[in-house]
Length: 326
Image 1 (cartoon, rainbow, N blue to C red):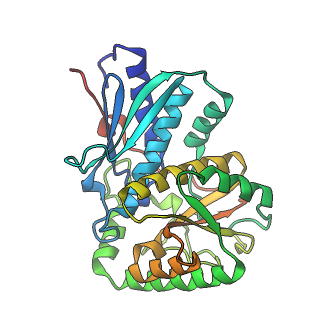
Image 2 (image 1 turned 180 degrees about the horizontal axis):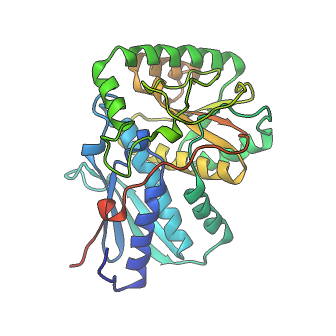
């Protein structure tokens, strides 16, 4: 990244790739890398940061990369460039998940600038939510944010009970799998690559009182959770029509769009992937959708109180962004 990039569009592309590093990812693995060309970005999956035991089909890795793709496209727009995106553009290169081609200059909008700000302040707060409910109008806004990429299904009270049972069962299955336990221990320890993983200050010091059980990380963190129960939390399933890599990528873009919109509305988002990781409980989630779609992720949404955890660490740009100097 030290060599100067010649053209304004290439500079904007490199900046967009850097900004994509703020995207959320499973266990903060950041399983992506970018190649910056004169007029395009190429997004690659980094298999070394795939959770082989937890996510053998790369569903959550691909979804994470889709969130990074959304962030790059948004950052490029904030720099004054529109872009065309192709998902999985080359069958001979399966790790090339997408390319993003700068199209033409556009006017920078306040909305794009605000969303880039939201990218930088977004974080995951695993504490119980406050007693303030999410307004119905905000739910509608978040639903609209996903539209065209994936869809949100808001769960009824009875469905939340079914979700809680599925999450509990998924947690039991994960606890019985030594490979999954070892993988989780790695990404919550100092063994994880610097700039990745989940440090103790973002993990609860004790299990929070939540309707849907939180993931058991194996050892407590240092985040004080305080009193309270998330009775006012809302739960939604992010889903779509297909269960294949292109759909997972688009679901990641939808996740990022919903999350950044939620930041602007003062709503906390916690992704819950446990029930998606286990085939049996993923089937239960599909039942909650009446079989009309495939679940990609569960989201807990709510209004948080003051304070909260810091953002998780990020890999330096030189680890994720390669500038083509040819």
